[in-house]
Image (tube, rainbow, N blue to C red):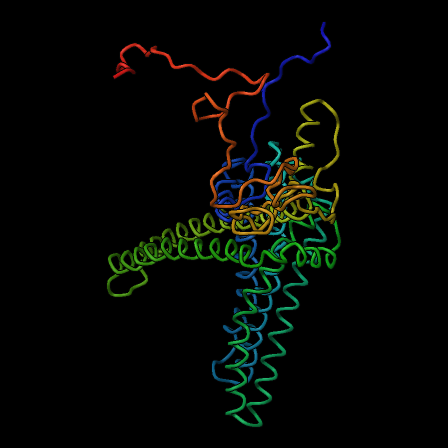
Amino acid sequence: MTAYPSWTPAPRAGIVPLHPLSFGAILGRSFTALRQNPRVLLGFALGMQMIAYVVLIVAIGGAAIASFSRLDTLVEGTDEFNAVLAGSIAITTITGVVLGIASTALTVIVQGVVVADVAHGVVSEKLTVGALWRRVRPAFWRLMGYTFLSIGVVLVAVALVVGAVVVLSQLALAAGIVLAILLVLAAIPLAFWLPTKLFVVPAVLVLEGTGVFAAIGRSWRLTRGRFWKTLGVWFLVQLTFSILAQVVSVPFSILSGMLSALVAPTGSSDPAAIVGILVTSGITQIVTLLIQSVALVVVASASALVYIDARMRSEGLDHDLQSYVDQRRAGAGTADPYRWHIGRTVAPAPAPPGYTAPGYGSSPGYPGGAGYPGSAGSAAGAGYPAPPPSAPGPAAGQPEAREPSPPGEPAGDPAPSPGAPPAPRPTDWAAPGSADPTR
């Protein structure tokens, strides 16, 4: 038994280093975070996407069959037929919109689970789906509220804009067209600005446990001064998966058309052609769902990493996370580090004494201008104590005055004063292999 603890291995590194992250690190780790826990993240995301897709297709298909089947009992072209047709279209459309909004609940669950997994991965923790869900469950309804609030605001804004354009077009067609063009142009920067400012809201809701409106304000503050960096991450992730979806869907669409033309070149409803088209469409949808699942995981990972980087830079979260890792390694039970010191302001580290931040260049107090100001009592601002005062020397450019030599002594250097070290004597010693010094 000794007073020193036994040796323990170094803690395993997390998915990102515990210091502020660069743009490339955030973007790269957003794509590679999936490797931290692929079975949980990709499997869970793909399963949720499949469930949402199947439920949506079955529900919309059932509503369409139930509503359009009434047309078989009516005469085409009559008023009753037209009324039932319009009602069937409206019912199917409303069902699709409502169920599409409701299916976002599953997407919100995936997003929250990914945020929690990335937050634990930063401190080298890998949790199961059950543990991650327990972390996300308190914030589930807040995530749903934020999602529905965002969708509602967008729908209301679009309805108001469309209504204004239609009303103005009824009064003056040219004015309505001009207004529509101006609103479309104004919506382009808005479509980039708002998602960027609200990019870390899901991470705030899951990791800090705040309310919806408090999370919106928190995201607004955390992205302040980091707008372009956040926009770059969000835009590049979205652009990457948009291009990937097009690259994957186009070949499958061409293959489906070629298969249909080969099996049924005359356009007949051959069962083999129908089966081939269904199989090709099914493969296309599966691949599309896989891409969407990966995109959802990457976007949520990027949101979590941008949030962590913002707090590292403004609130010193990296120190809290490192302290948490050290305490966990020592066996001490610690609380959630993401809820330590929320909202604090960390001042930048003070500069060393005598250092000027602008750095190189001429500055008073240092000849040559390295940026070091002179201190009190320093000589010419060089940063060192001034030398002791001495007798005035000769004027600049004048030879040093010497006293005449006493009679009988050769002129030359003055004799050494008593107590001074003896003058060096010439020697004929030379290093081995060197030239003879007497030559």
